[in-house]
Length: 133
Image (tube, rainbow, N blue to C red; front, side, top):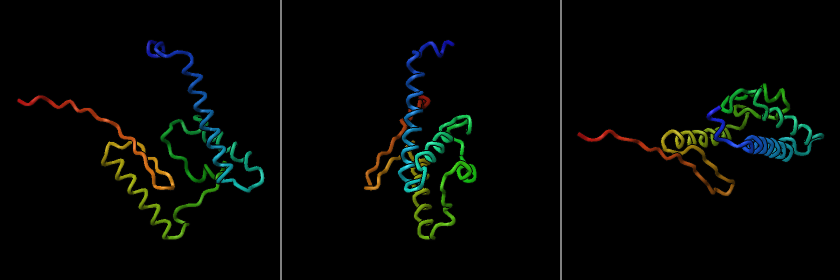
């Protein structure tokens, strides 16, 4: 209770709004891209977005969702292994570059658009070194 006392009741409403916004954005993107042109695209998108937004399905934000589970909930997924070898190589190169950046710098998030503009968020670390004798 002492920790919760520092937060006002509006925080819960704000968090609920953020969760709803995330679900709404994902449903829109799924309808526009993954299910574009399909019958009942909006319904399929809403159902999949609802599944992805439900924390009880995963119990952790960082938990991986396997392909079978996603397909069982209507997602249309191509396995990287089934793509042309040139595309596999490009995906691997991007993945390794991102992982190297995250592992060897203070970067915690990388945003890049299709025009090559990028934003890298870094975490500042303060190290308290012991005094020199």
